[in-house]
Length: 240
Image 1: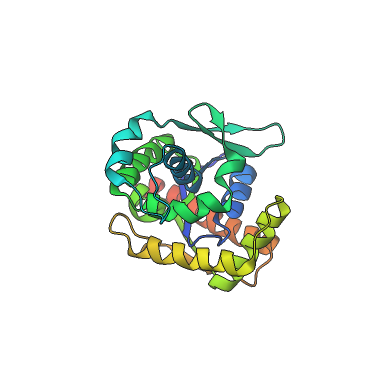
Image 2: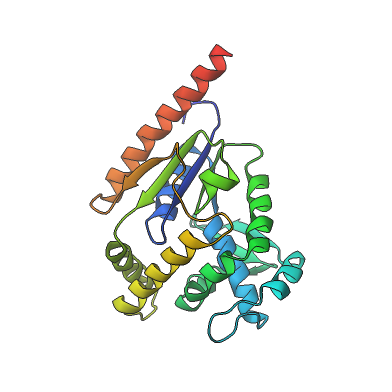
């Protein structure tokens, strides 16, 4: 990429809507840093599971988890193949946090107000120098409400479940479509109805239903939106 004004790009959307795939590809192409906030919530969920803070029925001991948040350190490591792994307290947990057990518990954990507030602070710190692509559920509404480019991804739950099944099977995890679809719908409900930073489209976000798009088409569409956002930001600077 040629030199340009560095901006913040917020990509929000429903679970398995392709946020991470889109965000990673864009970050690589334009030379920005990528932050997967979903991985951060998954890491906290794994910590809670290991600490016995989630009951068999999925109920989270919110008070106990809140008191232990200072014990949780999350970072990201770039692998030789270019992929990004999530590090929880010094341990590479990338494979473990992507499994169905974590997927089934992450939304209740992410609904804990103290967890969201703690991770929002960490996420905002990542963006202090701008030049960042961040995906999640509340990036354009809570984490970076002034982001120069906001995208909101959506697709029917059935389409998203099919994608998720293919992704998990490719990783060697044996899952069924109905199980994954139920998980997707449950997460949608919890994400949209939680009190703290619920999933919603920011008023100035650009919506995209990518259910019938190929990844190259999606990437080309996003590059056009990125170029437009940079032009707007540079024009605004020039006027001021």
